[in-house]
Length: 90
Image 1 (cartoon, one colour):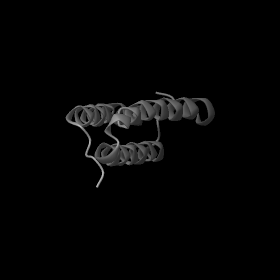
Image 2 (image 1 turned 180 degrees about the horizontal axis):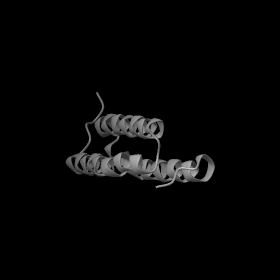
Image 3 (image 1 turned 30 degrees about the horizontal axis):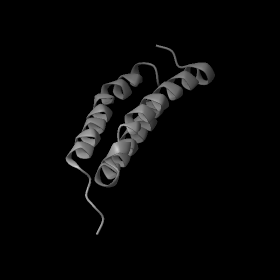
Image 4 (image 1 turned 90 degrees about the horizontal axis):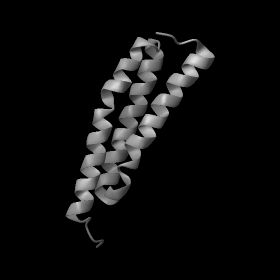
């Protein structure tokens, strides 16, 4: 049986999940510039990353804080690409 993560590791993982939840309003407010299909795509991505964070929390909690960093990068990239290539404007 593998050793369970330490209390510190679980706290770090929980903070990573909390950071992912904090990003939710940013993803939701993307509907101000993105069309409905773009908003739905972003919400599917955010939900998928939340699932990844929860799964990582169980096995590798020190990696969980990387998930909201990736989520922020994806959000920025999608909105920038939408503005540059698809004409998304506020």
